[in-house]
Image 1 (cartoon, rainbow, N blue to C red):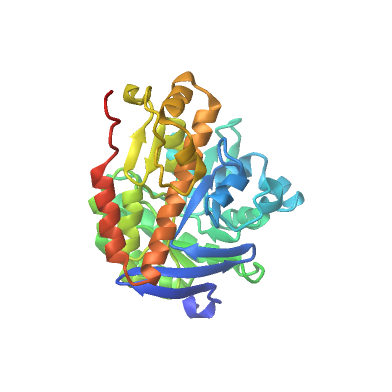
Image 2 (cartoon, rainbow, N blue to C red):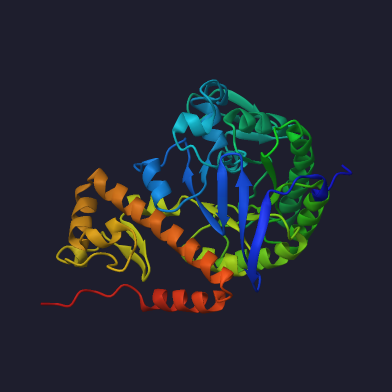
Length: 384
């Protein structure tokens, strides 16, 4: 394809940088996204146990919906008939949908990948389904996604270099087909390409160069946080980012821990998504300014202190550790809800802190202070 990134309208405004770290503004049909941005994951059109109102009040500008799950139930066609994903869910704001490729990867015993498409069996009723690049774009357009993702093949690491390259080359051919299928989308809607290449730097560079030549509104780095050490993930980011167009948003898919976010922003990443805040919240882990706190631990049973009395998020400073411990141990749904909200809020506070620090040219100071706070760790209550 002879088109390039310059052929596409740019909806991303770079507002400032501090070293490789960047802050900007991404304008979508349903609102503005401040970057760096963390996208909470609403897999099936909902955040487990959390109201959209609380997600927005915590500071999220954009959320992620899962194409694979939504196309199976309630179906993209039904959502389209009901006004699109924003109206259907009541979120109303910007939404990004993944292509379904990552979920299909996890169905290794139920799928078959060919040049044309990936076919798989529904985990719901066993029905045979074909997902081609064209169908992936069609589904995301029916969902009314502000940002759609190309269909790709993601390889779980570790993997053989030959298999990594085969999947990367197939993903590039699918990227061209997705770009063609997206050409009729209304103005303002965006399509992101996905860099693959596993843990092989040369393949990452080749993938990024080819995607930039095809041309997308933004570029994602996929196939990481799938079993490799953090050092490998950061090495792949460092290899990839310099090759991507500097005026387009960069999205690291499926990442990650607060430390992953801090390290990745330092290396020039603008957008993230991960189920970690809510999944770990449901299992009793709270993320705070002083690092994670496992509320299942018995030492919290008699602790009257809040998780962080300096937090701007009310539940973090209003509920005692003893009460949160009790809710989790008793299996009360409120415990999972509160910890999920606390975690979403902390991730948003971390992103807001990075945006402000970058804008003020003091990202290094913020980075070092945040690392120092985490190193201090959660301080146990004094006995007696």
